[in-house]
Image (tube, rainbow, N blue to C red; front, side, top):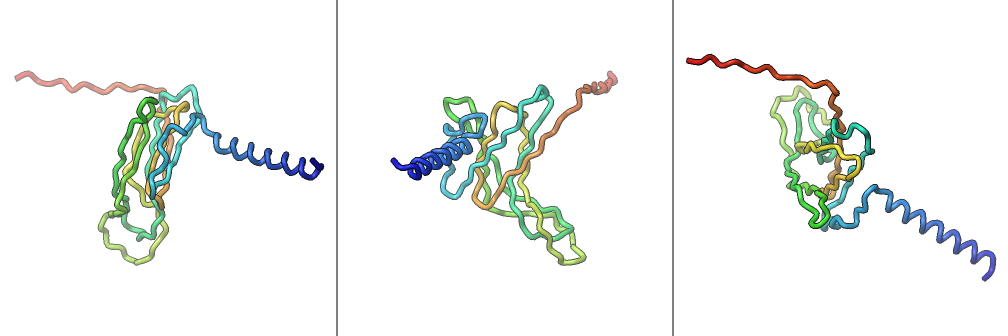
Length: 165
C-alpha cells in the first residue's frame, strides 16, 4: 500500500467517525422513536439538566412563516397527539394540521404585509434535562420552544369565608 492510499484511508475513516459522532450527539438514543412518516419531519428538544428542573416548564409550539397583516393576531389550527413509545417509557408528540390559519377580524388601516411566525396553541410540559421531547410535524412547519422558571417563593391563597344561613 503506497503512502497516498494510506493517507486517503485515514482521511476517509476520520470523516466517517466525525459523521457518526455528529449523528449521535443526543443525550438519549433516538433510534427507538419511529421514523417520520412521508410528509413529516422529526424534531427534538433537548435541554441541559439543572438542579432546578422541578421549577421549570417548557412551552413548545408548531408554526410557519407567512405574510400577514400588521393589526390582527394570526394562529395556526391544529392538534397535538401525545403518544407512548411502547416498551420504553417515553412519550412523543405528533402535530396534525390542515394548514388553516385563523385570525382576529380587526379592520386594518393599511394593507401592508409583514413576515410573521403563525403558531399553533402551545403545549406546556415539565422540564426534564435527562429526556428529550420528540415532535413530528408536517413538512413546511417548524418547532419553537420557551423555557419558564418559577421563583422559589411560594404564596398562599386566601380562603373566602362563607356565611351560614
